[in-house]
Length: 242
Ligand code: FPP
Image (cartoon, rainbow, N blue to C red):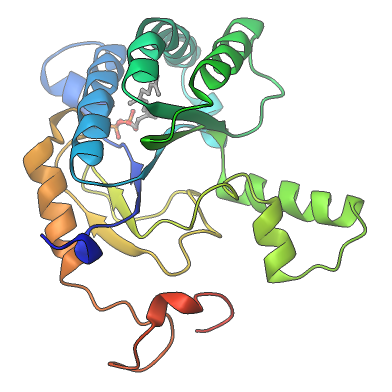
């Protein structure tokens, strides 16, 4: 596949862990555990395919409303997975970034996040943004508050620069697994010109072949950014056109 047909930034709503577990008569947390393995496999596969940024939705602002047992299970899993995986991610050249509201997270999780970011800050092979306690609306509001606090004009450019994902270009391809076709408060601002791919596979089953299917579909899309077909240089001005 020529490099131009490979997305630079892929973002994923990793949906279907609970159903994966229920189908096997396992507790939902078993599906989330399997989801961590699927994420590791996916990050490796993205790197192998020349994708430079992977952004995943790991815990939404709304996920606090799940049963307490599942929320605390997810927090434990998150802290454990960080402790376990960061040394290898560091060796693999992955830069970890955590995107979301940090207020309200436990000290254990916060410490894990800070250590993971510090340990991998110098890496540049693949940026892995983990959206945790994140919502697209939260991001827009916090960005607007920052722009206002700095006394800047409320422009698209100033807002974009205040967004939590300002360190990477907007996602080229947004994938949602698990069969649902909705955005669920993920990257509301940044996905304005993204291509979307919906997979029926449950997240723990989302393997290299499924990723390739999404990339192949992306490669066939014509991205116009509001221009007419064949106008060219489409990627040059994605802001402010419809
Ligand atoms: C959605 O499936 C998945 C989540 C809310 C959690 C995803 C988290 C992980 C894959 C673990 C990430 C961990 C680290 C360390 C980054 P669901 O529970 O909504 O599934 P369902 O739709 O089948 O109920």
